[in-house]
Amino acid sequence: MKIKHFFTLAIIAVAAVQGMAQNSAASAIDKYFASYVEDKRFSVVYISPKLFQMIGKIDTKILDMENDAEAKAVLEMAKDLQGLRILTTDETPEAFYKEAKAKINTKEYEVLMTVRDKDGDNVEFLIKETNNIISELLLLSSGDDEFVLLSFMGTLDLNKITRLAKEIEKK
Image (cartoon, rainbow, N blue to C red):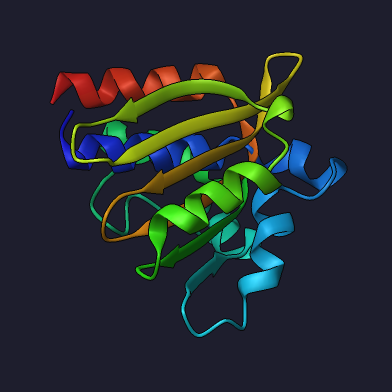
């Protein structure tokens, strides 16, 4: 899968998680994230619901994208995103990966995909889903050089994800 397509799908997934996150308990990243926000070993990213709302309101005509179905699909999904949190470090990535796996109640999540390669890199995509509504997409990743914990929160609509995937496939 091309990197562009991977990130587009990730953005779409994030956009769909908004509504459920407001009514549910704290996300996995919130639980894990809090203890490392001020830790200088970590890079921290937080994108607020407001930014996703603003992105969802972008006028495609102004950006000369009114005929770009993929862009429209991404913007439609962004409206439903409640937030994005990313926590990364290059110090002892495997130790932080194991700590995250121990702290995060993975029984609340369903594994979508797991990748382990011969170089020791681990990547896991997990979702929190209730009644066919995905409220959180969680990425855990570690390798020799970096640990990444990423959480998309909102309401992920599988129909919107499918529409976006179809638009990406056309290109």
